[in-house]
Image (cartoon, rainbow, N blue to C red):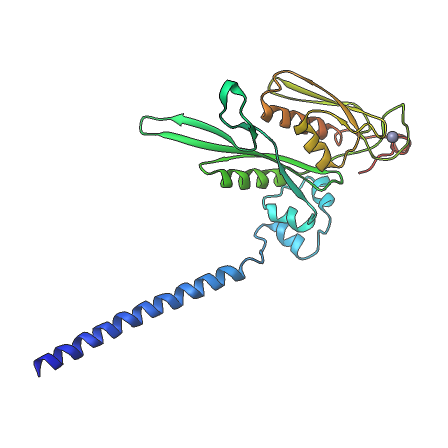
Length: 261
Ligand SMILES: [Zn+2]
C-alpha cells in the first residue's frame, strides 16, 4: 500500500515537472516567433515615421534640409541600392612588417587586470550615384566592429556634386568632379583633381573604393603626409568629397561643368 502511494506521489511530481518544462518551451517558442515577426523594422524616430508614412520619399530631401538621421534603417529604406565596403586599415602580423592588409585593425590594451583586444573597422557606403558615407567602429569583436562602422557610415551619408571640370575634356557629363578639392585628416592631405574621360583612377586603392561608391569614374589625385595611417587617408578623402557639395554655383556654370546634384 505504502509503496503504491509513494509511486503515485512521485508520478504527480514528475507530471508537474514535465508540465512546467512544456510551458517554458511554449513561452520560448512564442518569444522567438515574436522576434522573427519584428524583423520587418518599425521606425522609432520622428523622421523615421515620416519616411514610413511616405511624407519623405527622397534621401536628398533629408540631406538638403540637414535633417539629423538617427536610424541607419532610414537610409537602407530610401536607398536600397546602397553598397558597403571596408577599407584596409589593419595589417596581419608578418615578418619584416610585411603582413597582409586586412579590413580589421587589431589593437591591444594592457590593463592591470588583463590584456584587452580591440577591433576596429572603417566602412564606406555609397550607391554609385553621388551618395557616400564613411564611418569607423570599434568593439571587442570584429563582427560587431564592422556592423558599427557600417551603421556610422550610413548616418554620415552626404550627397556630392559630380561633373566634368577637366579643361582637356569639357564633355559636360558627370564622369569626374567639377573642380579641384582637398581634404585633411591628421597629417594626411588628399587632393582630387578633375580628369578627362577614360583616365580612370590614378589614386591609392582606399581612395578608389570611396570614389567608386560615390559614382566618380575619372580623377587624378595627390596625397601628402603619413599615408600609412589608412584611417586618416579614408577620412581625408571623405573631407575632400564633402567640399564638392559645399559650394554653390551659378546656373550657367552648372551647365558647362555638367553637374549633377
Ligand atoms: Zn569630361
